[in-house]
Image 1 (cartoon, rainbow, N blue to C red):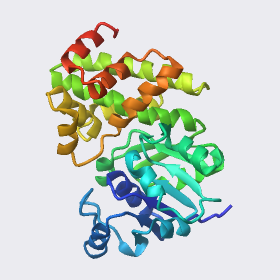
Image 2 (image 1 turned 45 degrees about the horizontal axis):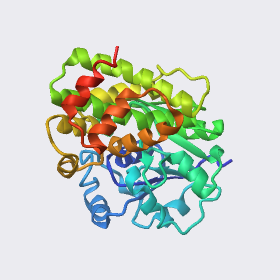
Image 3 (image 1 turned 180 degrees about the horizontal axis):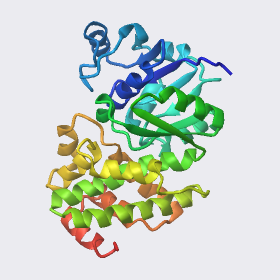
Image 4 (image 1 turned 120 degrees about the vertical axis):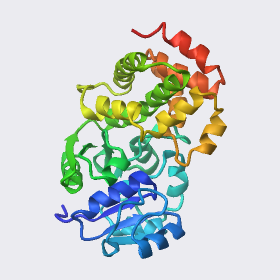
Length: 331
C-alpha cells in the first residue's frame, strides 16, 4: 500500500473548502476540483475561496486546482466527495476515467435523490466499488469552525480498517482529532438523519417552542435515529458516540446549521420554495426527509419526527398543527 497517498477533494462548497484546508496542513499537494472556473481563478490570485470560508488562506503551491473532475481523480489515490448530494449524480456523469483501485470517501451528509441511497451504497451498487474501498467522513464538525481552527472531532468509517486509519491520520492536525469506526452504514445514515432532526429543531424554534421542548425533541430524535439505523443495519454500536449523538446535537443547535436555519424559516411561515431561494446553501435534510420517509415504508421503524417533517415539507401540512400533534407523541 502506498505509504504517501495522494488526495483529491471534489466540491467547491464550505465543507470541501474546510477539508482542503485540513489536508493542506501536512500534504505537499492535493487536487481540488470545483466546477466554477471563476472561483478557481480567484483562489489562484487571491488565495481564498470567494464564495465559502473566505477567511481561509491557501498556499496555492499545494493545490492542483481544476474544473476537470477526471484530472483530480487521476491525480489521487483517495477521493473525498464533498458536493451536495443533490448534485452528486450530475458531477459523476462527467467522470470518464476509471474509479477502479481508487478509495472513495464520502463527506456528504445526505442521500442521493435519484437512487434514494446513501453515498456509500450508491458507489457500491452503481459503480461496483467494494465496501473496503468506500468510507465516510462524519462527526460534529462545522466547516465554519474548521476555518476558525476551533477544536473539532471527526469519525472515519470504512470497510477496510487500514483505509480508515490512513484517512484519519491524514486529517489529524492541531485542531482536528480523528477516530476510526467499522460502522460505515450506520454512521452514514446517522449523518443523513441528523439533518432531518435539525430541520425539526428549526421548525420548533420558528414556531416559538423554547429550550425545554428542544431538549425533549433532541432526546427523542436520538432514540428515533437508533431505531431507524438498527432496522437498516443491525450491529453493535454506541448511539451516544460523537458520530451519532454529537453530530445530531451540533446540527440541531448550532447557529452554523443550514438545516436548522431552513427549518426555522419553515416554522416562521416561509414556503419550502421561498426558503430554498433565500438560502445560498443546500439544506441536505430536505432531500433526506423524503428518502427516509420512503425507506421507512419498508423498514417500519417508529419515526414520528421524520413523519412530521415529511408532512410539512412534502404534503404541505400546516407546521403548527403537525407539531401540536407531535408533542403528544414525545416523552
